[in-house]
Length: 228
Image (cartoon, rainbow, N blue to C red; front, side):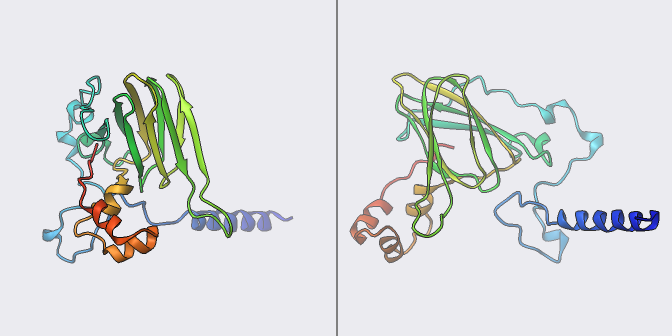
C-alpha cells in the first residue's frame, strides 16, 4: 500500500467513524416542543445555564442525604432524589443520585427510568431486587433477573427496563442509587396505567390485562401512592 492510499484509507475510516457516532443528543425531559419565538421558550433540552461569573460552591452542594425518608405510607418506602431539579450543578453532567428508605417489608414498586441506567448499592437491611427484559421473541416470555442483596452488594438495572426493590427483612433497609442522567425520570407502572389523568379507557385495560372491566374500574378508583 502506497502512502497516498494509506492516507486515503485512514481519512475514509475517520469520516465513517464520525458518521457512525453522529446522533441527536439524548432527551433530558419527556418532551421539548419547538417554538419559533424564543421569548415564549421556557426550557431547552435540560436547563438554561447560569452565567459562569455568578456560579459558586453552593450550586454544586446539597445536604440532607443522611436523613431517612418518611416510609409511613402504603408502600413502606421513600425515595429522596438528587437531580438537576434540586442540585443545579448537575446540569449537563449526565448523573444523579437517590437515597431509598424501606420500612420492614416496604416496596419500591415496579417502575422504569426512561433516560437512565441505575446502579444500586445496599447499605443496610436485605432487599429482593429484580428487573424484567423487554419484549422477547416468538414463544418466549419476558425473562426476570432477581437477586437477594445484603449490605455492600451492588446491582445494576439497565436503562428503560421495569425493575423493583422489596425489603424482605424485619428491619429497615437503606440503599443508594446512582443514575446515568441528570433527570432520569420515573414511570411507576401501576400509577401510570391505573392512575393516569384522565383515566385510560377501561375497555383498553380490560383487553390488555385480560380481566373484567369491573376489576379495571376498581383499580382505577384506588389511590396510587407516589413514593418519590
